[in-house]
Image (tube, rainbow, N blue to C red; front, side, top):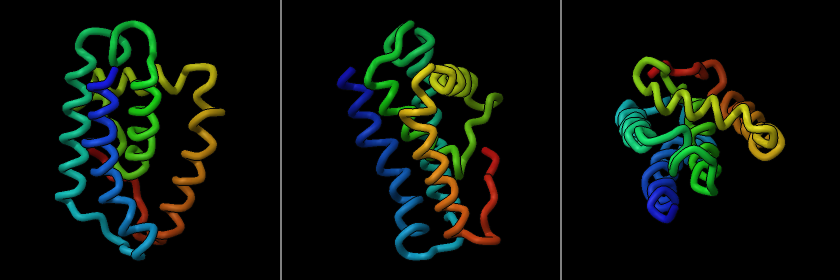
Length: 130
């Protein structure tokens, strides 16, 4: 579990922060491609973590899944998870979203984040396909 939590806090979150901070706090209207590539690299690594089961540590979700899905769901506002490029990650993300407590725990905040990003980017807002 610690390894996956470390991955979230030291790989996914810093890459996500590097995208969100300029948009939300500095009013930047464009997402640099190199930051999207860094996020794609995080997606790729997470996709490889999912080779041994439905969830990060096997067949049942753990706190690591909950932490990572919060990061991935927010990142997917700007860079949707492609089922073709990241098949295991896409399947995991769909499985996490289907958990009975997902919407209450993550969906409400995610919808607010999506609206905030759309508001900040204005007419430049579009979902970038990976």
